[in-house]
Amino acid sequence: MTLNQKQTSTIYGIVLFLCFMPFITPAIALASGILLSIFGLKHESIAKYTSFSLQASIVLMGFGMNLTQVISTSKIGFFETAISVAFVMTSGLLLTKFLKVDSKVGMLISTGTAICGGSAIAAVAPVLNAKNYQISFSLVVIFILNAIALIIFPMIGHYFNLSQETFGTWAAIAIHDTSSVVGAGATYGPKALEVATTVKLIRALWIIPLSIIIAFTQKNKTSGKIKIPWFIGLFVASIIIAYLFPAGANTFAHFNWLGKRGMVIALFLIGSNISFADAKKAGIKSFILGILLWLIIGISSFIVLTTNL
Image (cartoon, rainbow, N blue to C red; front, side, top):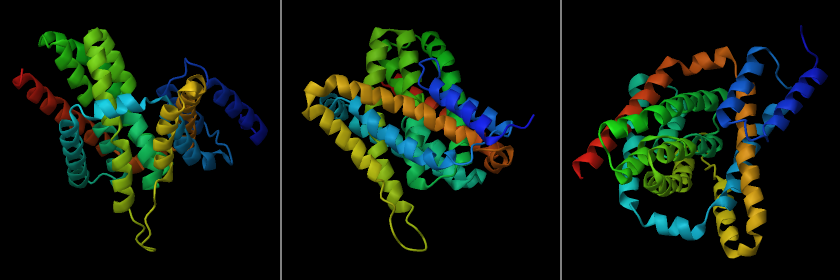
């Protein structure tokens, strides 16, 4: 049965409401959007809010970051993190060309692997001016590998008898999303959780310089103008504001929660605006790229960490 626009709007309204519920994860939201798209239930005007919801969510999540912790953790393993991010990004770009993957999809998958999964993809996508199918396909690749990592990493750690400190560092480097890093660390032990969370925070900070670098490298070819990611500046400002006004901690916690839920909504909107035709444009090679990058960073970091014990 074909639904009219009013009925479709009602369905979208219900799903958007549910996106504020804790049991709706980013992966579920993305899958729900894709499902509606498959059944031909597309909202006429909702797509225009996708980019704004992504950017606003990143800014709001900044209120949940502690500036003191950000600065202190930035001093720990800064060069190691810089080398790791540069290594993954370079490998990703080379593999993108070798596999002939869509350049923006390749950039998004590389960024998600190098930094912090879906959050990094969400931050970089507006800078790249990526299309919905490019964003959603990159997220699907990251989410699938994330789910696998959450299960197998603790098993590998126990098999090789890794210390909690080593496992925490390895998980933070080789697992994409922060949520999965925290989950794997908590499964392995309290010290592993502490180390994993700290190291992952350092990596997450690279969203800021990388977004600015990409903005300069993706300069508009026709006008010669640079697309400046202003929302990244607002993201930094939100971190500073939360630090300068500690009395507003409760309010900032609400902002942070709203940002996280906003990200869930953004992923739903992205999923709702793709099609099978769009997915074909990304191709199976994108999955191969994501898997290869994951294996490269996972194996290389494991070797480096275990040989320095």
